[in-house]
Length: 262
Image (cartoon, rainbow, N blue to C red; front, side, top):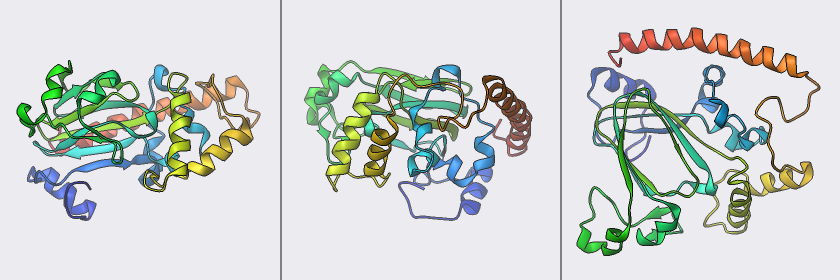
C-alpha cells in the first residue's frame, strides 16, 4: 500500500469490489513475481520489451519486483518523479483512466529536483505556478491513458500520474541497450551512498555484472544462464506460456466481469 496505513489485501479488495476505496488506499507497485509467481508466467511481454537485462539478476530482489500490479481509486496517484536506476517504464491499462504528464529528461532542472528522494518539487495538481515559475518554461506531454492502452516511458523522463477513475494496471521497469550504461552508473552511485541505496542488492548486482561479463546486446529469447536449451526448445516453452497466458487471461476477464471491473 502507499499513501496510507498498511492493511490486509482482503480488506483492500473488498473495498475495491464495493467501490468504496478511499483516496489514500493505493495498491502500488505490488510485485507479481514475488507475491504470485504463477500469475507472472501468464504475462507475455511485447517483443520490444523482451530484451530486459533485469532477467540476468534472477537471484536479486529486483528480479521479483516487476511486472507489478497497481490498483487505486479516483484521485489517487503518484507525485512528479524520475524512476530509479535510470530504468525505462511501461504500463498496460486494464481498466479505468489515468491522467499522465511527462517531461523530457533535459527539462528536469525546471521541475525543482530533489536528488535525495528521486522526486521533484513541482506538482501539477497542487503547486501554484507562482511558487514554481521555472516549470512555465517546460513543455510536457499531457494525455489520458485508457483501458487497453500500453505506455512506454524512456529512462529519466520525469512523470506524474493521477487516477481519473478507479484503475487497474500492470507496470514495470526495464533495462536495455539504450539505458544500460546509465543503469550501471546509478547502481555504482547507489552502492556507494547509503542514503541513496534502495535495498536492491546493488553491490551484488555490480559484482555479478563484472563476474559474468554482462553487457549489451541482450537476447530477447532464452535463459541467460545458458542451460543448453536449443532455440526450438525455448520457443516451444514460450509458446506454451502464451497458450497458458491466453487461457488465464480469459479466466481473469471472467473474474473482473464478475467484480464489475469490465
